[in-house]
Figure 1: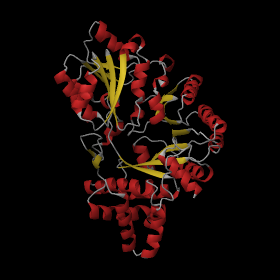
Figure 2: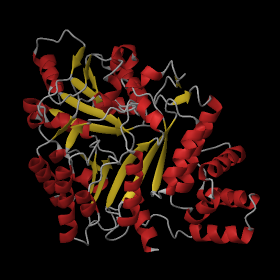
Figure 3: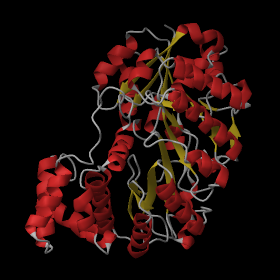
Figure 4: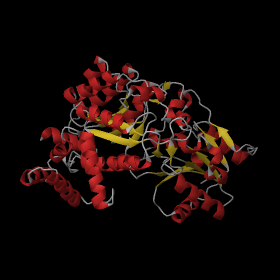
Length: 497
């Protein structure tokens, strides 16, 4: 094998769409190119041994925020034991501010941005000459019609056991400064009929779970409706063997035609990831986020009341200009809309994003190591930011897990953010941990907390007993439910019970 494409995924269930795009576009080099994915946490020497067993002349690594530290070690070790192997890097983590990165210094070449055309061309030059003189190669952005689609490269094992990532478009027209997509000029759509044909082939091979990576799925309503109709047709034809789709949507753009399509999906088959990020108009203006908050709230409220889609809504703590009180108000406002999950994120300074322009004016202090999480700013000090980090973790364990539906209402009361922050502080004080807390221990701690707050112990134990019995926990995988994502399974159970 001459060329090896590799990356370290965050978990096995994630299949790298980027590497499959590269493999699909290798042209005459495709027969001598192969793909080998790993998962973070593996021993570096084992990875080196597996990579070199292919006897590659070139290894191309996809580098991301979650794997850059381990990939840096991997590249360093490869250069020690096999210096003759040419290392080419690509991916969002090394496409910006690369001059200061150790992994780039150790590698032979770097492709920044789009690699579909530039990476194969660079490989040809390395193998056939003339040898490239420049280390950094800016990725060429071709028309999407010139890019071969990668979906046939998902293996039968991928289809059976992994999430399949697909994209109907690339890019984003919005300029939110905390997001790398803010650097795009606009969004570009793949040919719709060709894309739907690829989905058809995947479905025929047994694919049932599709996760769209489009940043703005509902930007073009006509296209959105056509894609949704594809899934509705499958659901109508095979209700006993359902398909599941995940889309990221713009919260304040939900016209009636789209609502009509959404209402037709049965419970749990449709998941929306909705980025609110902040309800503070001044903060939104600072980070160049255009959002009609009232319309966004109305749409989330409508989706909860009139659709059976699972809603996963995002907020970001630590944005410039937002203090704890403002974030708390936004959290309580969002919670009142009753989405199924609130993803409480902490701001990260992704390389290349324009959020860096606020660093001095707002005292933004970031961790210098991935994932570059904010540590403090002029509105939220370090200690308070750490409390927010713990809040986010406990919120996942207690609220987003779906395991404490009845007792969570007792915890939140009339002041949800303040009350859950108090629980979070108490949990940390009594456990000194935010990870590896066994479910039975966590249930006991939440019970104790509620009793300390004055709730009658028999009432608390009755509520906890209902939760702990699993009435709203994720449905077990069984016949006809093998493809059900955990979040949708919880949603389906909660609707049924």
